[in-house]
Length: 67
Image (cartoon, rainbow, N blue to C red; front, side, top):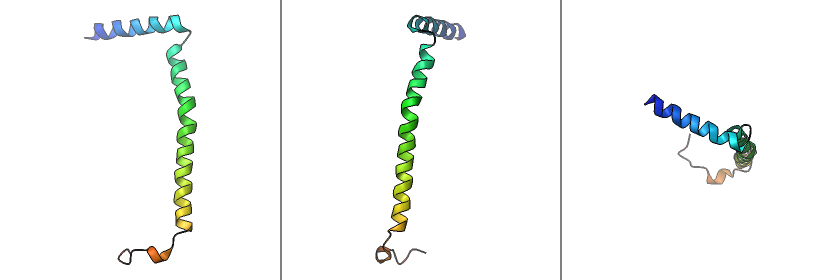
């Protein structure tokens, strides 16, 4: 079973060599460059919404059974 795994790895490595120096590494870097700012912005927006909701909370709508 490990020989099949080695053949697949060698095949993939040779296929990436034709595309450039390190095509798989560049693909991962490209995905990270896209995803990190998107996830950071999403986290910032969620944090900001939760902070603003606490500031502008109207106590008239508070659940009386909540401690």
